[in-house]
Image 1 (cartoon, one colour):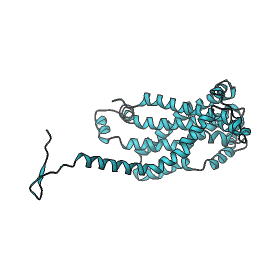
Image 2 (image 1 turned 45 degrees about the horizontal axis):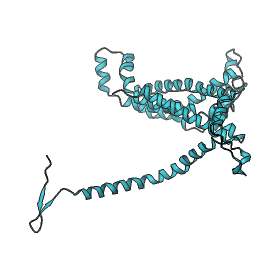
Image 3 (image 1 turned 90 degrees about the vertical axis):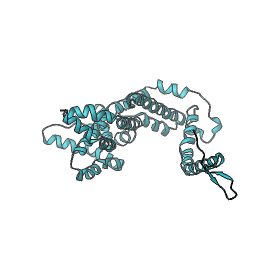
Image 4 (image 1 turned 180 degrees about the horizontal axis):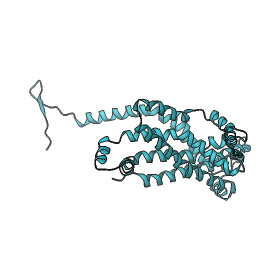
Length: 316
C-alpha cells in the first residue's frame, strides 16, 4: 500500500511531497547524459583505434589485398573465405597452430603454479617484507622486453652464461637457441618469467580475501595445511583462478615478443607462433592473408575463453 505524504500550501491547498513522474524522468535523463559524456572520450578512442581497424581487417581478410595493390585499390578482388581455406591448407600455419598450442598448454599451467606458490609464500610470510618481495617478483612484468631478450640471448648462447655454468660442473652445454628441440623450452621459460608476477599479484589479492576465521575453524577441527588449501582456499579462489587463467591464455595465444626477439620463429620454425606468422605475412605484403590469420587468433581467444568460463565459473 503506497502512502502519499501531503503538505499544506500557502493557500491551504494540499501539495504532494513526492516528486512527480516527470521530475523523476528528467533526473534520470540528466544522469544518463552525464554518464554518456564521461564515456564519450573512451568510446571515441575505442571506435577510432579498435572498432574501425577491426572491421577494416575483417574486410581485408575477405580480399586478395597485397602490398602492390596499395597504389591501385580498385585492383583488389573479393575472394570470400579463400584466405581462410588457404591458411588451413598451409603446412607452416598448421605447424604454428601446434606451436601456439604448446605455448598455451605448457606456459599457462607453469605460470599459474609459480605465481600461486609465490603468492602462498608471501601470504604466509612476514607482512612487513611482503611489499618488498611483491615489487621484486613483479619487476619482470614491467621490465623492457627488448633488454630482457638480449640478456636471455646472451645467457643461452652457445658460449653464454648457462653453458659456462654447466661446463664448470662437468657438463657440455648444448646450443639452446639453435636446437629445434631446446629453443621452445627457452622461449616458454622467458614467457613464464615475464608473466608469473601478474599471476602472483592476483592470487595474493585473492588469498588476502579469504576469511581467517574459516581457516581457524578448520584447524580446530584437525584439518592440516594441505587439506585447508585443497578444500577451503582453492574453492574460494575459483573466481581468481578463472581470471588468471583467461588472462594468461589470451597472452600465450597471442605470444609474439618472446619468439620474435629470441629466435624470430626459428630454428626451422620450431618457435613460430600464429601471431608471428601473421607478422611475417604482413611483412611479405600479404595483407589479406595476414588479416585472415589475425582473425583466426581472435576466434581462438573467444572460443578458449568461453570454454574456460564454462568450466571454471563459480557454481551457485
